[in-house]
Image (cartoon, rainbow, N blue to C red; front, side, top):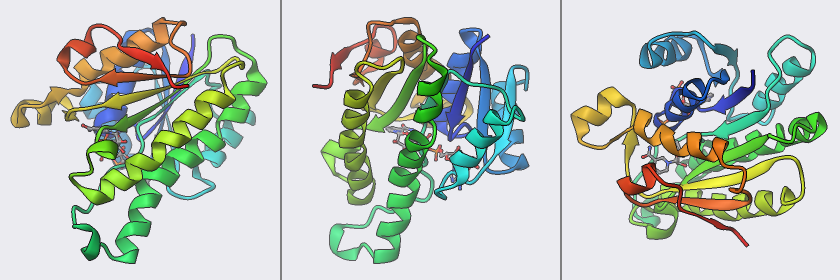
Length: 238
Ligand SMILES: NC(=O)c1ccc[n+]([C@@H]2O[C@H](COP(=O)([O-])OP(=O)(O)OC[C@H]3O[C@@H](n4cnc5c(N)ncnc54)[C@H](OP(=O)(O)O)[C@@H]3O)[C@@H](O)[C@H]2O)c1
């Protein structure tokens, strides 16, 4: 049985990836920051079956590396796929002149560096395993182009070239790297119902389809409206 390492597993997007993994009969290695985050995920999913938890601070440059080290030592299960839901909490919506240096740095750490560390410190492991079915998937957002909110826009924008570089670097490897470019709001199901936005479990369809479609490779998968939750809309990134 395959295992998916999920970064940001308790977030809106991470929960959708966990749902997709379990629905497609895969196990999950969920990176969480503490036990209360793990409990939150179990409450959201309704069970801990198929989920192994790894505690780490993904905002530090040794957090994800420590998880991979434990996998190599056999203390945590081997994984064949990575999904990065990034980190998004505590964003600031200030106009550019009002963004403090601390806010800027904090947000690049939360929303860009966490994804960068996740990629840098897991890709070598997937390449070494040589599993021909491996994938690495990142979720970015259209805010990176719209820039109605400068702080999240700038951190999202920085992820686009990172995703393109990773797509290039893995064009001929055993790892299918893809970016999901999300154009609307997704939240964990309970909150989505309250706020009238898309449920994480519905958004999970997109990741499930990517896992099941080997032709999707080094691509941007666009999710612009609800129709894109049923049929993959993708284009090679270069
Ligand atoms: N949601 C959307 O509609 C949407 C739309 C477009 C793009 N996106 C993309 O998806 C990404 C995630 O969005 P989201 O809505 O899922 O965010 P979110 O709900 O705020 O989730 C953030 C995740 O990061 C975790 N986290 C934060 N700090 C951490 C730390 N120090 N160590 C370990 N984990 C930590 C959180 O864990 P805790 O639960 O412990 O706090 C949570 O799992 C965004 O950056 C963006 O790229 C989302």
